[in-house]
Image (cartoon, rainbow, N blue to C red; front, side, top):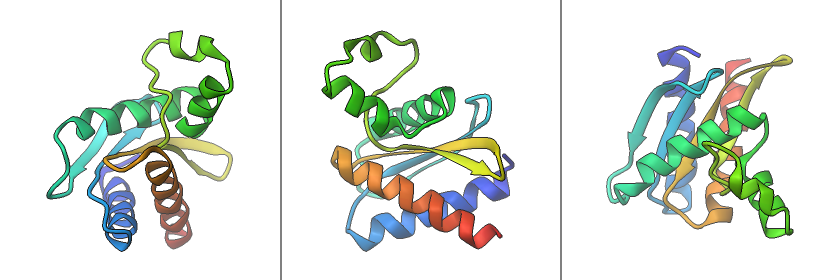
Length: 131
C-alpha cells in the first residue's frame, strides 16, 4: 500500500461521506496494520481519528470488515471483546486486490452502520477505479 493509492481510497471515502452529509476521519493501513494515511474532514470530532485507525487495524488483523466483529459481539460472542488491539465496530474494511490483502480502510464519525456502509462503498468504488 503506497501513499498515492491510500489517498485515492481516502478521496473515495470523502466523496461517499459528503453524499450523505457525514463528517468522518479516514485511515488507511498497510497489510501489517501500519498507518499509511489519515485525514479528518472538517467538523469531525477529534476522537474519530483514533477510532478510524483502530477499525482499519481490526479489519486487516482479522481479514474481514470490522462490522463482522461487532455483529458477532452483539450476537453473544463476548470473546470478541477480549481480542487484543480490536475495535468491534463497523467502519473498517479490508482492501484486497486479486487474492492479496494490501491493507484496510477505517472510517469513523457517523453512526455504526453508516460508518460500515461508507467504508464498504469507498473501498468498492476505489477498487473499481483502480482496474
